[in-house]
Length: 275
Image (tube, rainbow, N blue to C red):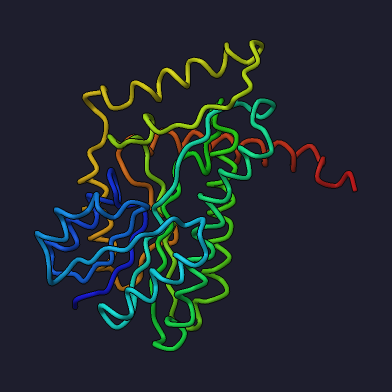
């Protein structure tokens, strides 16, 4: 069954690989980007399946217009992929209020307002699938990515609550947790204006690893992400959370094991009864 898609952050990387795959499969796709001319080749290649729209998820009017574009082009939206995001680099103390606000405006508030805009359509048709592109960083703390980790953790909390609130009207929710992919993420990192030397022993190694990601021969290709999302969309009952990429297993298992161990120790010691 052909589905109607609205995908954010398609100018490169995961988003562009995804919309190319969807259009090749015959799906109906609204591919969005702040500069949609970056998608001209794709729209020319798939004129009947892929249309573009200008979208900065920080702009409420453009969010509403992107949904209207999907309704006008294809009659509605069946799957929304909230993919647009960027990374703010800086430790907790280094990130300013303005930098923190910018990170949340794109990574949390944008997906929230866009999903809110499609929910009336989904309630009316009794079905819809919201896909939120999070990260292993939504679960695993990475030094130097305090703001990014926080934005992805918040995104996952919002998405999980949406699943509890809207499941009864046919809305499905999936949180994707990608590992490392060969995208523009590292090149587009925003670096905090304030740097504090005391934190360099823990943050500089992470910054170096991020900048070297695309030169890693074993880094996941964006086409893997596109394949996972395509297969996910064919499932009658999609999972709430889905790790993406073979490198995610070690990160997530270590984090879950550590949390479980700490929980068991706290309960066994009776610390949860301190109140």
